[in-house]
Amino acid sequence: MFLSPRRARKLIDQVDRLSARAHSLLERRAYPGRGTHFPPIIIFAQPKSASVFIHRAIRRTLQVPFYRVGVGGIHHSSIGYSQLAHFSKGNVVSREHLPGSPFMLQALAAAGIGKAVLHVRNPSDSVVSWTRMVDRTLETRGMAGAALLCERVLPADYPQWSFPDKLRWQIANYLPLQVAWIENWLQLADSQQDVNLLVTTYEEFAADPRAYVARVLEHFDIHLPASEISLPSAEIGRSNIFSADGNKWAGLDSELHDMARDRVPESLRAGFGWG
Image (cartoon, rainbow, N blue to C red):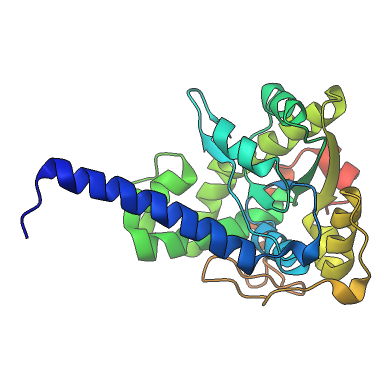
């Protein structure tokens, strides 16, 4: 059967519309929301802070879907309007690594979203997890994927370096970005009243994941007993592996650990109890 380009385009449009409707019907069936309506839950999380584990625990517990609201803006990443409109209807959870900005929180408040979570981790620990993730990205996506992930120009011979040398480079180039990300968000949390931000830490989560999820839900006025908190598998794909007992620095040079620690300001270390 011959299809003209015009007819093929029309068929594509029809298939897209049918697919969207089918997805909506299946989503309502797959995620019943425990038979009630929950407010939209958004977590602004530092990378490598177990945020995938956390949002999956919330999804499983509330029986709601995961939804991305972040998009690429003109000057930096932000929240998309159509995504925000869908998200604001509720019965959905979102987890983003977006940098904090006053206009973004103003938009959330204007859409009726008055609460969010800011989740952080000691950068001197997360940089180890990050460096290992970059290694996994190099294996699967090559230098193009690693450069886009790091948002920095990587040395041409970076893939051939030893892990300690890679870690040294990430401590010097990536860790300061995470410190700035945390400091910016904390400053924003203190200077605005649009959105009530609950500040949580990876360390708090790792100590008791179930209690942590319950605390996050309580922030959104969702009260469930610990027995009803459903936690996912500790290993969620090759890039998201949570281990509460894991020592990220085991077997690594103490000089590198000291270097990483010294790049975290004393104000953050003291404020969060990061050693």
